[in-house]
Image (cartoon, rainbow, N blue to C red):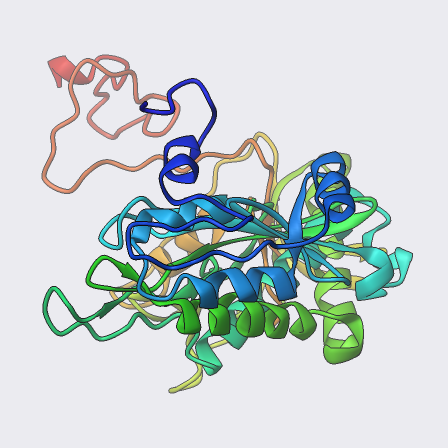
Length: 379
């Protein structure tokens, strides 16, 4: 029988079994994983077991065929949180397995004030993702096994998305009303095409609880966390108040617009970048809910601005900062209060590419030679 129509992993469950006493093709004996009452409860709740059961399964499947990992797809209770193996990779050479973790707020103990609004939930989730990524990197959880041929070790990594300079709503970490969900990928370890049960136990039953603990409120810098959330909230408020002041954009006084390099979106720190200074004629003052009053250059609606200057004087840097102003940025980025309307777009021509049959009069018009820019194909 192929096991079709019996659900994911049915073939492997039929072939390798799970629970009870049954000899597999290697002659090994599986032990009953719990009493009848425990099994009935797990069936009702959807739980496959707890962390102890998971560790026992993994150790008991050392050197077994790799597809048996499908048997642990589902929910496992770790007491203070739940671990879900959503999809086990079919092969050690395939894309890593997908998993997520659900941690109730009663465990993380974040004050409700930190996630009472949509923007605060986004900011909190963003901060937690950065903490998780830093933890994975510091402890080298995200490193794969160094394979030495077909029979060498493969997989073993535990990875979350790498965040950039923007504070975005992502699926990697989601803060809900009742719980926090973390989504990650796991390279279920193998030697050749056999399960590395002991190492898998270390990853799933030690590294994952360590990651979860790293985002408890008591284990984070509460002042830094609050600053991150309030700064993000202020940026969102700034963007929403631009239309009320007749503005389409704003650049805060003292903003650091220059980037570290063409390959890095981080701020230029060495040599020190020149802070932005607003022309007095364009300076406006705005009042933010947390930061209070800030001043800077206001870009008014229905006005045309021309950015002039010599080479390496910051024209492109200024325009690039504006084009990223529809996003919120992390504290210390330098562009936190460089803001444009969410509907703003950046339009540019590709170097060396001619423009044909396009009306460019909204951008270029009233040329000295009286050329009609409504018909670029004819000029």
